Image (cartoon, rainbow, N blue to C red):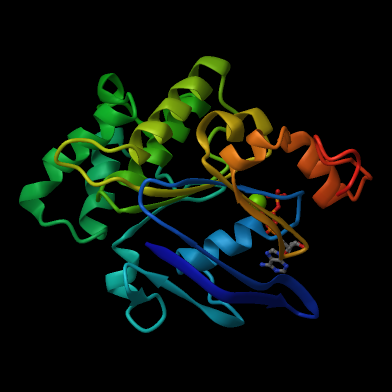
Length: 253
Ligand SMILES: Nc1ncnc2c1ncn2[C@@H]1O[C@H](COP(=O)(O)OP(=O)(O)OP(=O)(O)O)[C@@H](O)[C@H]1O
Ligand SMILES: [Mg+2]
């Protein structure tokens, strides 16, 4: 559904992302991991068309993001590290505004906004001013704006950062729900970045780990679990470079 081909991004003489390639299908929830400064946000910004790559391509639903930006971007919902919320707008008013910007016909907006608020647990807050909401509820509005136009691809940059445990659990359920099949609705392809490893184990089916902009690992979580690997161990081995033995292999890495 979304494919990164040899994506690179250079800032001055610093290569933030280096020839990164992967593709993600509908129904997949991919955990995008890596230490601070690894290039996760930069990659996500390239996948959504917010930052042009220095080289490489992004294909969304068969459309090249840079040759057919309008067609490709319609298929993508994005929760940035800092969501661009308008603090003086109401929740419903803001979501209507985003729905229109995303090209939904006016007659479909009310239903789309209702659906997004319902899914993100925002119905009670519909008339509240965004600036008055707690951080967790603002984060929900950020997710609602990413899904309001029902994009098949969701790109979520640290979606649960700053939330309380109950809200973290709600947002995880929401993400799991978005990727599973629902009658009359298409499954999403989801890629999310996070530093919370238990979160990845709870909702992701596949892990992509990067370091210094380079892919270190891309594997299904089931497979890793079957080998007795924990993400903590993998992170230590792939990223920190510790000599952690592979589980069940008597130390052979
Ligand atoms: N606009 C920019 N100009 C210059 N350098 C940048 C810019 N944006 C990002 N970088 C650099 O690119 C590298 C990757 O940053 P990025 O924000 O993508 O990392 P990240 O993996 O999202 O980290 P974190 O876990 O801290 O969010 C860093 O070295 C960062 O300083
Ligand atoms: Mg980041």
